[in-house]
Picture 1: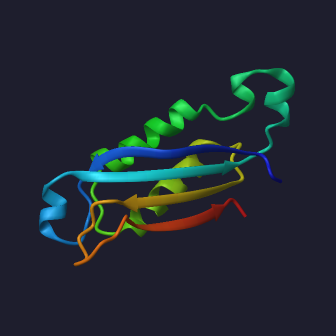
Picture 2: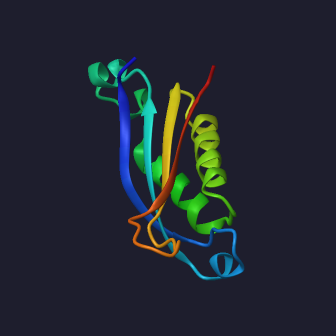
Length: 121
């Protein structure tokens, strides 16, 4: 299936990282989310209950990034994927990208990030 809903470059401040100062001081995180599902029913019926309310998805992602704390980007992405699949039964597969644009690695770098793909099967 190629139908999908995308939320691109959501930005939130969170306290995530391996080091103590990363857990203490909020820093920016960026999240992309792709949800694969059959959009045919929503397209035919023009009804929100036939698709996924991406306002609710955005709120779920914001809650994870802003109110929780993880040491690894992999844990943030994994939690987002699991929670989206649990909360939205119409979603068959989810792709999550999490970027940390202010990572200090000793040289020029736009961002560090992870991408994961999870499905129901």
